[in-house]
Length: 253
Image (cartoon, rainbow, N blue to C red; front, side, top):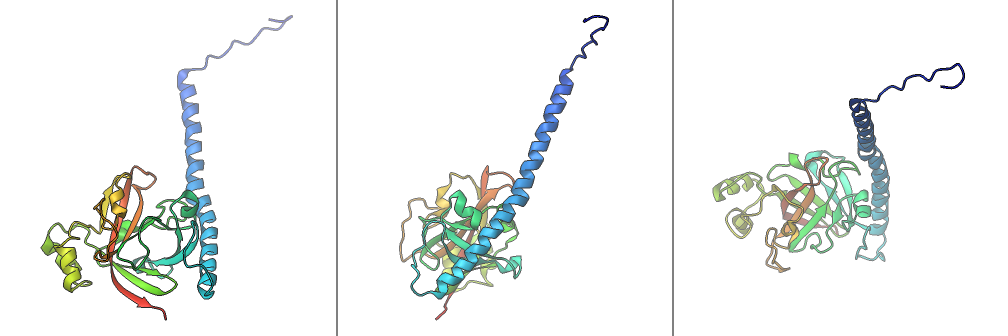
């Protein structure tokens, strides 16, 4: 108390009010983060992807360009017809954060497109362009096309839910035939599923023979394409894996 004035009684702050304010603040932070991930990073990734596609066109038109890509360099184009005619991404070398902000990135230790073994790519599912957001929609025999400087390569998705040789053969009858169908249906690739969920520690998915961690490069291997992305959406607890088999390669020249 000072002079003739009386201090107002202090209002007690209840614990519930403190908790409520903390939750409100936390909710605002989450909303801002979601906006950043889903909107702002998409804009940034879109600019980087456009630049990568332009650079790729320039590189392919210049015969003197180095054919061995450095980390972050675009070297191929990925198309998935099931996602519409506008689905097209420049593929860059490397799976570091900066490379994946541009677009799908190549696991540098995996094989290159068209080679026996496993051409493996990683890509974001939410934000940062989200090139692999819709991988869960793919079905057996769906096309995945990879264009390089020299050729256009077509892969077909392997069976997703078939659990027997007969079922795998039936699902693939429309896109595979002969010895390749035999190997995928009941041979050494019978255990390779078109889509499955696994842990981030499962490095065997990008091995030369998917699922066989000790496999090495060999001309006897089938040429496979692998796509990896986080699962479920907004989480990196698991990985969604896509495997497809090469069915055609058409030289450009």
